[in-house]
Length: 357
Ligand code: ADP
Image (cartoon, rainbow, N blue to C red; front, side, top):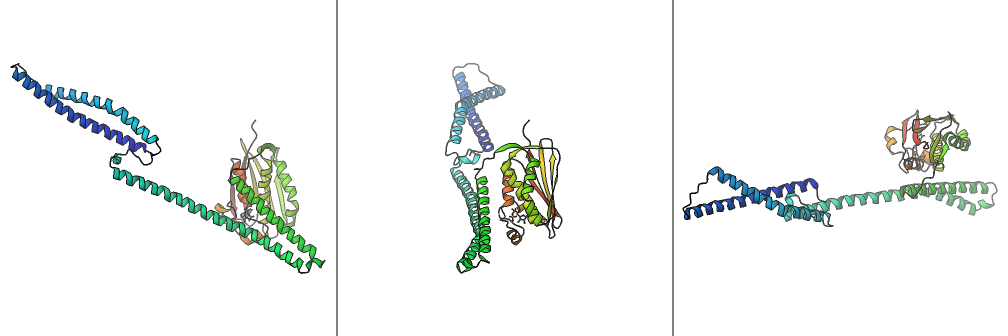
């Protein structure tokens, strides 16, 4: 595109050139005019006297006249041509910079510009390729474990386990659990890709936030008890929010389940608070679990990122939970924050908007 500051410079330069041209032309015409008057007056023996100051005054008037004529004749067409070129599809190859009067400089400039453009496009393509490779690697790695597990259980059953009443049911249950795990991974991946492709439309509706939190607590009660975790909700008067209830259930579930998965040995406590702010609300989920080292915090919302992969897998994690949480919150135009201290605990907090009054 034409750079405006350069264009402005070149217009200025053109005016200066026109001015110089007009001045030279003016001087020549003035000299010719004075010489003509001189000879004409001399030839006719007419008393004619012209002083230096009068000559300068006359010359200036002619210069000014010439300059005005040139400006009127050339300035408007120049502006029009410049506009036409800058709007044309070739505008990238043209530039009305002061240097563009030299075609070699202009060609070199456009070659350099094109090179820079292709380099940045190449960089983008390389990043996309690396992202694609990592993504495929991560997906196959996640699916590999449950597939091999299922294969092992089926092989054992076929090798005679099916007739052994002591193990057949147990193996089938294990295989079923791995199928569930695969389904969860695939569903989570589908949710993330739909968010990334902006295909997921939120279905916002007004609902009471404490009620939703209590619902999720009830669903996860058994899981929490098994891990000696107690949930405590600091309940105030009812607060309405405007959000996608199904997706918010997913957010609260993921955060509560994480507070169970990453608790310390011997159990712990998860406190849930809701702050009623002027135009929005803030939900805070705080645990006293293992915590997260500061260096991992900027990456925990990335898909497949885990602080401790073996612990995450052992607890049934896919590394996708927080990525979904962030997508859901951001799709609501809200934000999520995390504060954590290793060995002390982690606090996740996110905002939500209230229904319009
Ligand atoms: P995962 O399926 O592994 O739990 P998430 O996306 O939910 O994946 O979380 C990413 C990582 O962030 C986890 O592997 C874990 O290391 C860390 N993490 C998440 N929540 C907590 C928490 N409440 N306490 C400590 N670490 C956590």
